[in-house]
Every structure is written in structure tokens, then in C-alpha cells.
Length: 176
Image (tube, rainbow, N blue to C red; front, side):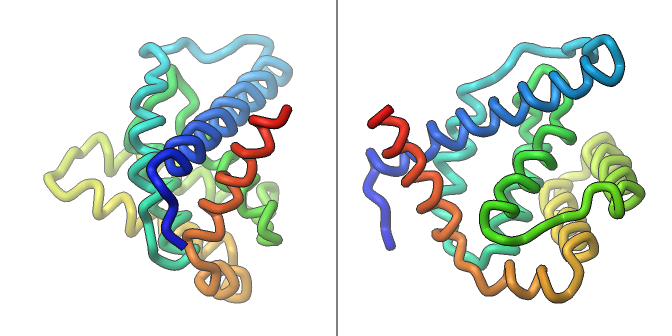
């Protein structure tokens, strides 16, 4: 299913809205548990998120490829003032849950921490092909935390299934 330009833009705006909602939830959780928020190291770059989501909407691969590109891209873009890794992971876990795929965050806490450390190391090294390396690392991480059954299920879902759900959400919001 090919989405027209206006539908793509609305779906991307909905993705930004939901991502920023995830950011707020992560910030609230940190404030509740730590009593303070991490210091921002930059301004929120909402336009970076919008462009990224508009580009990823054109993705035509399978669900595993789409989710890996989404998670990796959100982390690499670093559009938030802080907590990019945590927010992106929370956003992806929530998105997968909506599609019947669950990541047990408690059971996978060590894997998630290792992924964050590896991710930061890959980005810090800044090799010319770091984006490809980061994507591959992200894909391996997802397969590991999902396990063979769920990663296989995710691989059988088409990318546009996720995109259509954002498109439907954006249409629902115009009615609200």
C-alpha cells in the first residue's frame, strides 16, 4: 500500500507525537525514581524527528528490518535533549506490544544495558560506516531479546503494517 504525501506527513507527525509522549513518560519515570532529571546536553530537535519519520515511512522491508532501522535511526539522530537510548527503546517496546510482540524488560535488562554501551561505543568511534554497524548491532540485539519465535513473527510482518497503524492514529487524532 503506497501512502500519498499528505498521509505520510500526517503519519510522521503522529510518530513524532507518540515518540515525544514516550520521552515524557521516560522523563517522569526518571524523576520519580531518581528525584532529578538528567541534564540536557542540547535542545529538542523536533524537525530532525519529523524528517527521520518521513523518510522511514517509505521503508518497504519486513518488520524486523523496519524496527531495527527505526530504533537505530532514532538513537543515531540524537534528537532529544537527553535519554535518547531509553526513550527510543521504550518507544519501540510499546510499538511492538501494540502488534502482539513483547520484550521482557526485566529479564533482558543486562542485554539492554550491553546494547546501550555498544551503541554509544559505535557512535563515539565514528567510523565512516558507523550507521551500518549500528543498524547491524541493533538488529542482532532485537533478535536476541525477542528470541527466535517473536523475531520470526516480527520478520513476517511488513513494515507498512506499522506505518498504517501510525497513519490510522493520526486520522483518529484529527477527529479528537
